[in-house]
Image (cartoon, rainbow, N blue to C red):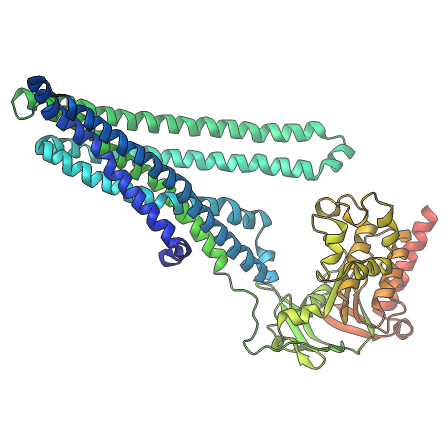
Length: 583
């Protein structure tokens, strides 16, 4: 893990080297003041009183001022460029993580919540960034300061230094004890804060439902409970923090008492003069401060390491598999065949059992049957969203998709689903997503074929109209037609329609169906249909029950067979008649 972390420093090694050098110089300059103080009290001031020459005193002060000026610029460099290193490392990790997420299979997203993935990109990597910047500096500066100050204190008085050093373990123990309690309390505070965020997200997302059911008071009450949890957790966190800082400050004060008493006794016995004692008092904070810094740094180190581990957990997830000798699928005709296909999702029972289907070029095959039968799974297997691990094979133009590159297979397939996903941005952005290098004329032609161009032109900004998050400013039918325009622009040889009109009203469905019929022309089409009336004219219909193909044929053939399809069809039209009578 350390090797992988250090690898992110490599592009910035020169800047890091200067940063470390600046940190080292800051530490060395920090030792100048106590040294000059000791020399001033023991030499310059007594000699100046005797000789009347005060020049060394002035020059010593000027030298210290010059060094402090230099330290100011060095601290600027460390603060600015040190953080720049951390931010750039965080940026590279974030890009690597995002690029890796794009390569992960659907199964990963099935098992991981969006919020958890987001926390990897934001919160976890921020902790890593802080460690990347402060880690080397804190370790170097504190270590050098401890060694230099300890050596210098030893040069002043060995016994007094050892007495002070003997108190350090007490400081470490007290600090670690109270910091552990403080960390637990702040963890609880973060969790309660997450509860508030979840409540806000839920309420804002469901604001229309809240208003429709006039349950504003219930939402306020739910939020108030979460807020009370946060206040209580904050109280406990600040209680722990108060105990931590008051205790560590008390131990630091004890150091001063020890120095006061022990130093006074050494001066009384003649083993320490006033100048050395004064220099010791000034220098001891140079020793205690870095010790506290290192102790406090441990939490940042733990947070950073934990964040990097969580980052690696995602980076170590295996991406979608593609064989090394995978070939490009070119000049696609659209011939599709499922041969003895069996499939089960990770950790679940078998969903498909020995499925055999063949769709000739330019033909339309409809899949019907009860929910959960395996229809959508077949649609997900064709573009290789899930790797076929069981028996059988899926062929496009006679080639097993497992031996083809993922991108070339997916470029040849267009998908229109019931749940349309539109990206934040403009109408233009969402249509052009089908083929980013398309011309303006091609985009407009695609919109016209999807029966959405006329509506777009009624908008004040036309194709540059912002659609809001997930297309919230558009109706269901408008969103569906935008998704159809996107597929028109992509112009694939194979088309998958996964219950594309099931969530629409009858009037809108007719408009969308015209666009879909246009889209299907000349393309091999696989349709999952809930409303059987929409697939009567399909070239072939297959009934999927419990992962098996139980019937197959044209609408007329299946109706004549008077089996499952006929029963489903009759039942659906009886329900429609009842609805019409009720209305």
